[in-house]
Image 1: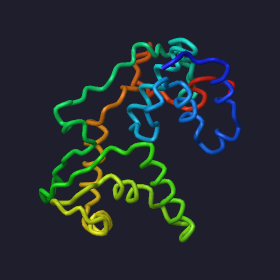
Image 2 (image 1 turned 90 degrees about the vertical axis):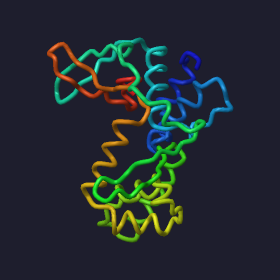
Image 3 (image 1 turned 180 degrees about the vertical axis):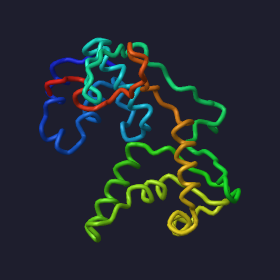
Length: 210
């Protein structure tokens, strides 16, 4: 990655990017030197680590932020990567296995990438056009993440499993498993009072006045 310049500050203040929600992706695309790397192939954890690194390079390690009405100065250089079992990766393949607690059903799943996030957002938007009162975010995300159920890779069967057979308690356990095991930077920070806060990453992460 390269240091941020006024070119990247133009990106951060681009109202079109901000309104479309693409400003941080545009920023990373500009900062990454190796153009063979596709932003859409990165998982959330990858992006978080790159954003923290670029923020330190661009504006320094001290991040002044207000959380729940309290002002903090966070030293971003102390944030570390979450522990991750590299052995769980099969030749760099984005595919993992999980056993449903209540009935021992084995599912394989992937960690969503930028490309997946866009597909999920499009499907959710389409479903809400059909029913404005619908709230399909959770099930839609699971349907895109799960690759097989007991070896069955048929998309229609996976969707039926999520809608009709995945118990709420199993869904919660699965989401917690992903949260605890996916590669990411640890955004939890212990402030001077001893309280642990979660470091927010958004447009103001780079430029409080943007």
